Image (tube, rainbow, N blue to C red):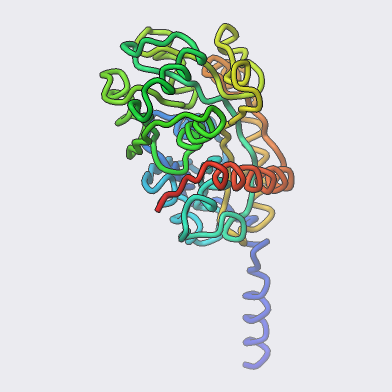
Length: 318
């Protein structure tokens, strides 16, 4: 009888995280998007879900709110078994820690990096009724009309928000920030003129600018995106301005390495498919599928960078 108990104990010990990882997945995998549908993180998540071949479906679960904190926190507190992943953003995993006095999760300690996915400029866009055609005219208008303009964002702490704060800081101008629960709520107000300015993610804003629904003034990266070569950068008028929005996959802390590497390998395959590459290029998204280690290094540098931007701008979420 004792020998039987020893054998059972040995078998249970062998059911280690590695053994469990080797059996993964045996049920659908949940990929949380921390913002409503329609934006860049949702586009990337659904592309991966549609193309992934992991042996089980990948189900996209939109959990918006609190600048992405609600969805990210949900995954941070999920079991580290590979069945809950999050499409993190520059906001949820590098900016929010400096903006919010009380974070529900630790941006580093509560997650296992899987891979950086893509980055993109934000696009400085204005409502068509605003009488400005370029960045210089916008700055002049803002200085002549202090606090008259409002700029929208899909939430406090998003790259869309802090791009506006950085712009104000570097140009010595003022305008009111209006946070929404998602970009799909902000865009109708921008088109209608209730808000006048937005630093929206290029994949969301560029198609609307091309349709003439809003006016694109500039992009926020240091160099022009091939997706919009005729749109100047903000830095061409405001030296030193740079704000890149990025997206990366994270799992809960403690997720087995074997599972992390399986997801990473599938991300490399999916995001290098020619049709996926073509779609992302037209949207202004530049893919870079990193190793988990490179994502960890990149995230650390971004946390330091945005902490300084937030401090210099004086922006706070609460």
